[in-house]
Length: 365
Image (cartoon, rainbow, N blue to C red; front, side, top):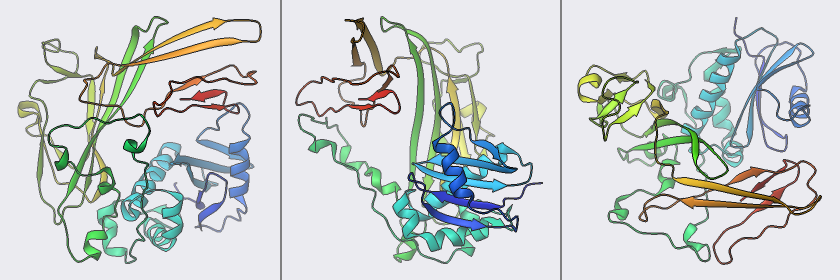
């Protein structure tokens, strides 16, 4: 049996932004109990599922916000986390961006969505497209401000041919219903390839182990239900089999696809045919463990100068073509818990910054 007793969204400070009670389980002030437990969890980070006095808490942290379910039933944790993830995507599709300001300004729209997604604590609909006929409130547009990299001192970004044909990154941060509200509809679809690289270096900077978890993510603003075709590399190889080591081939260890994909011609032509649903969705997930060229190499140097002083030098080398550049690069590295102070030295006029976070026992560069 799956039934949610409460759902709420908390800010990073613990303030309740959205709260909805679905069942009369007499669960009160759980938001305060939850936030105290998460902030002062013994042993560091609280798990995504825990129980306090017979109340099950399931939460997901997204963009600094806490999305929380509470229930007295023995529900599936994976189902709850998946539902929380879909709620976050649904809110983002209708608000444009998923932030504290956007949720506060669109709280009426959020409550309307919650009433359609959950009925008496039971999930009904989570599809952006299926919810459209039942949602009548217009979103309040919230600008997602990002500092311009070109304004940083000493930092010059390269330009390349065709740059004027690229849409700005803020184009994707708009509600799926905004164009209809303005009375004109622009048929647009945005495609992003997102990859998470996990690499293990030795002390000399050589790679010991490497892995790529990637996804092809789309956000559709197309009217009607047009059929689309996405062509991938002809030399794409799925799994470790004959031909996987052929020069120039792209080898994926495994992959999976969105339910809207039709894979009739994928094995022969490496094309994906699909009818995109409204909003943001992941068309394909894949994993790569074969050798590849790392975009960055990290080389650490550690020297103990005295019993109370340690010198740490971190060198990062970019192994990417000169026409490309790294945007919004952050380097985190842990330090000893007993560290009282840190002296940071960076190249002057390079647009760099570093911060010592004592509570987290790490430095952000």
